[in-house]
Image 1: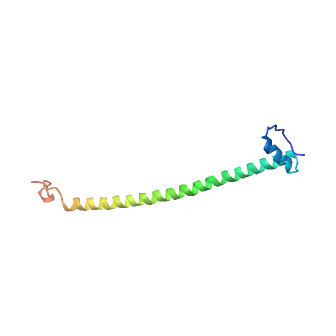
Image 2: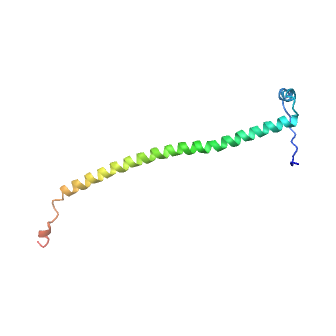
Image 3: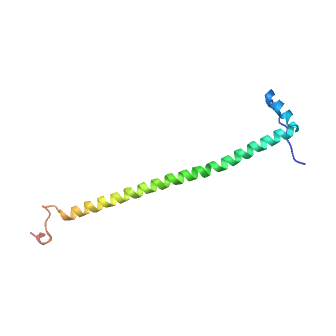
Amino acid sequence: MQDTKQLNVKLPSDLYDRILKTGKSRKDVIVDALNMYFDVNVHNHQQEPQQNDKSSDVLMEKQLQEKDKQISELHILLQTTLNQNLITSPENEKRWWKFWA
């Protein structure tokens, strides 16, 4: 035998009349309705994280692509800066052969 608990609920008249018209016992209709309600809610809660995971994956992928682009641009800028610094050296710097002079 299944352990049961009592639940007292006041229903709107029109809903109560609809329950009576089904021909089933009031208990069976209410138990079926509550089971369907919780099954649907459990199913919806299981789907939401998957959808959020997919959207967060897409967002993270876009962010990674943007960061890769920024890194590439910074690398080019660094190379350009280093090349310019190698080409143009300061004029007041002593040459290695003039170190003792």
